[in-house]
Image (cartoon, rainbow, N blue to C red; front, side, top):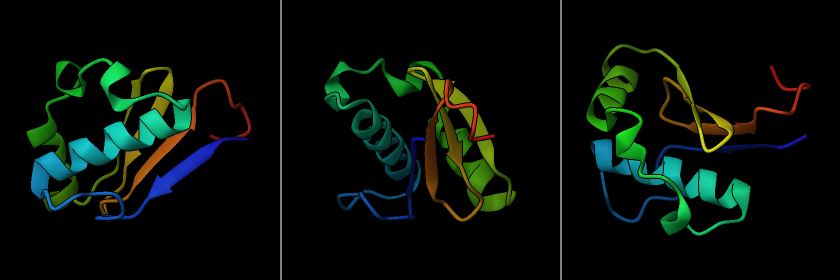
Amino acid sequence: MSRRVTEPGGTSSGTSGADDIGVRIVREVAAELDRSPMELEPLAGLVDIDALSSLTTTQSVNVSFEYEGLRVTVHRDGSVGVERLDDRSMR
């Protein structure tokens, strides 16, 4: 079973807002896949990072999407969860 969760600000390097959430997502996905962040498809080509940040900070919702074969969930508290889609025990 594979699942990672990063708390808000847990892996950021001084960025904030949309940049911060985008950086945290890419870092978590890269770590889960044991790949360099530079090897991943650009996240901005898949989701609108500004809109994602706005939704999770002003609307108190969780947002999930698929990226690089993983389910990424940005929780209303700003934490980022990553789980493998083939892991049927995590729903």
